[in-house]
Length: 324
Image (cartoon, rainbow, N blue to C red; front, top):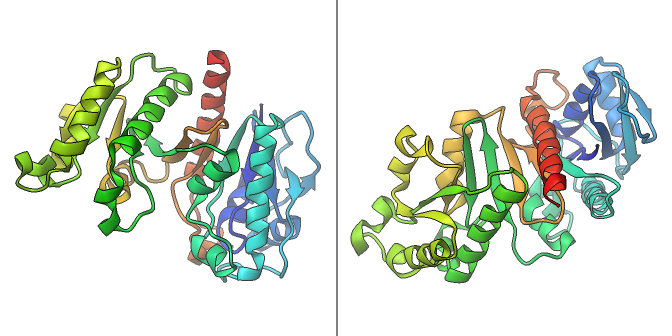
């Protein structure tokens, strides 16, 4: 199996993760889309051996990486953002995505990118999830993070808090819930997924006294989905849903917004968690952390989430192939 890996923000820890990955022999064929000059310089800074090779059909030997060069425009300084190099990141993502769409690679793993510097360079970029949605030409995608013992998917992702209630419509909730249900079947091999759903408001609206979104939108939509044979709970208070009593008997949680579900998951599994984009025609996973500019080039980072992302990508691609 061939897995594409994007290097991510050149001045962040993405190059470090790639160089560290090269130090071990993988069962998968990893192909890094990134800047060869940056990878070479970062390996020297980390005092680690690195040989860069053109892609081949067998896994690269320890100490080497298969690389598709996406050169930066200006020399990279670890920890210092430079908008001039944002184009390299966009090229990484575009080429790696297209390789998966063309089945040259069977999955894609992304190292962290920096949204701010990409936007400073003049690109409209709200995140990997939205980028791949547009690149793959699909109407809706779903962000889900997973760690051992917990999966959390999101109805809304990168929206200001004041816009979230208006964004939770019957159409959006139906699309997100359906994608989540189908991907748990097709990419995770769960034949009858059981999914718990967070309410939007405190206490899931307290019968309408703390908000009516649950009564007017969320619960009626969930009932319609259940009538179609899917297994969704009605909206539950998020502060009690994330307890063993509930989580021990579900396959995933559907949260209404980014900071409702992800803090819980990251507290439970940070360093082992994986960011997954559902609803794409390709498999895409990512690390659960950001660019960590302050750690770039220092040699003191944890690559556990990267390793988990590669393993998760392989497992999903294998299950999806079996279900094709």
